[in-house]
Length: 115
Length: 117
Image (tube, rainbow over all chains, first blue to last red; front, side):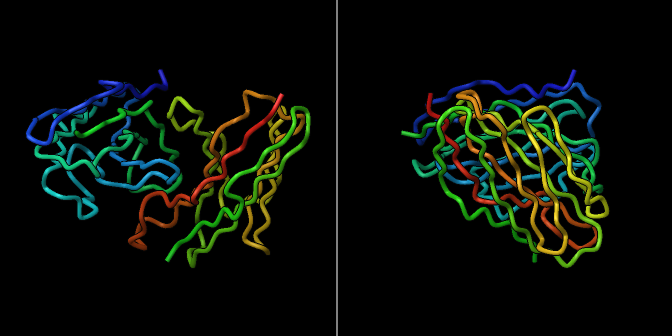
């Protein structure tokens, strides 16, 4: 199984809502990533989890709160978002974070619209 | 600092034409890895290839081929006999040495390829 799954596929939320994005992989990977991608731009790294611990936070605003309940699951909790946060949110996983050798496998993304 | 440059923002070709997507990278690391990803309209990034800095052999996979030239810091991607299904955004990416404090994966800005029937 070389698949990373993400739910939901689409999400529309108001600025006062609280919602969560979910990501799951069953490849035994120990590193998981959240990326944000705006239209016609490359993905931008937000967070990296390695062995279920947060390793990188790329100065992401606190209205985005990641969580890694176990090695297969990664959540992104959203609260009080702004319209400019509308984007495609991609999850990825790799065998290990500490090795530049490992390719990252990406999920299909969640297309988020903030009204 | 690491950097990946994809100078071609958009390319349009007619089906069955060959097309080459350019990628130039910058890094001070001795060991590094280069990647190509495909992003179709559905949004998912699909891994295509990984190449390490010590392996300059060109690679061919079906209609896809990659040319890695360390002397020019380039890792170009050629699609032979393009098909409509090749229409996508293609990203070149670089991963350097972990202890250099590098971002795990540095992406180029992408090249949008449109193959017209």
